[in-house]
Image (tube, rainbow, N blue to C red; front, side, top):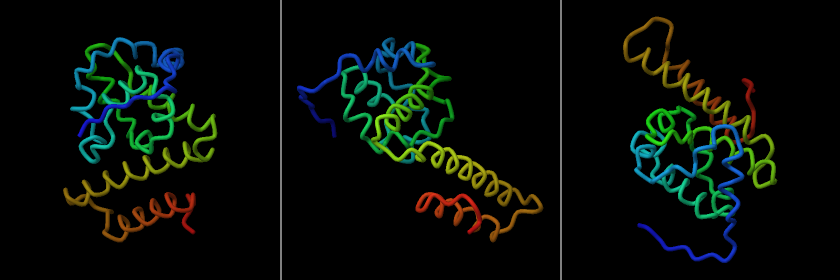
Length: 164
C-alpha cells in the first residue's frame, strides 16, 4: 500500500550528496521504470526492500527516512539492478553510499558494514553448498551446511565471525 509523505524536513541536497559518490552520478536520470526492482533478488525475498522506492525517496530528499531504514541493509550487492538499468543508474553503488553515510552519521554501529559483508559472503557460500548438495557433488554434507547457517546466525546476533 502506498502512502503520502508530507515532511517539512526534506533535504533537497541529499540527491546531490549521493550523486557526488562513486556510482551515484546518474541517480537523477532515474525515471522510475522499475527494472531495478523487477530483477532484484532481495525484493523478491522481502518486498520492504524496493530499489525504485529508495531512489524516489532519495530524489525527494527523504534523507532521514532512507538513512534510518532497515531496508538499506537488505541489498545483496549482486548488481542485477545496475546491470539492467536503461538509464545507467548504478543502484548497487548508491546502496553502498547510503550505508556508508548512515554509519558515518552514527545511525548504525560502525561494525555493521563489515558484518553485513561477512553475512553476504556466508549466505553466498550457503547457497553454493546447497546447490552442490542438490547436484550430488562430493564433500558437502548436511552437517557442513548446518554449521555454516549456525555461524551466520552467530555473526548476525553477536558479531562473532569465528567458530566460537
